[in-house]
Length: 148
Image (cartoon, rainbow, N blue to C red; front, side, top):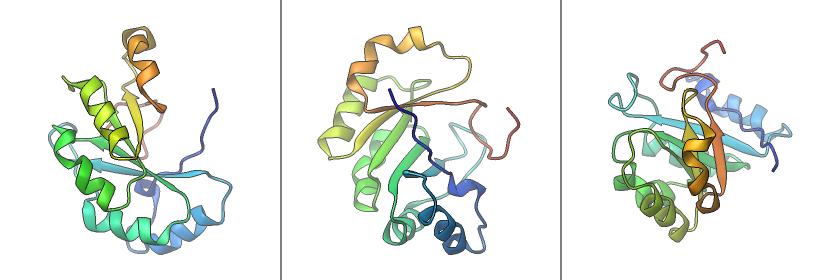
């Protein structure tokens, strides 16, 4: 098991994401983390396809997209076309995890599973062979900058 450093652009300067990406590009971070929220799965809205496309065109790091949205499978192909190299979907609220994880991999992306703080690893043990990475949330999803 290895730990991956993945700074989130949610913590960046929204008026100048290029500056934030320059810092990430020059860092030793391996990935950049893009949080996508729909206002339904979590009570906030964030980045969409145009921002992801711009980030992926400029950033030199692996692009991991964390989907905090309802029915994420509707967007897998579009996210891949916009430059996502990995997708992390939530265990909580997803009824077809095996199918969705396999579809992410079929599209050539790394499949990640995100777990809210209260979800035990024992709950998802059987899914571990089906994933490429695991995102363990230290706070409940929906807002950047929370204390943990």
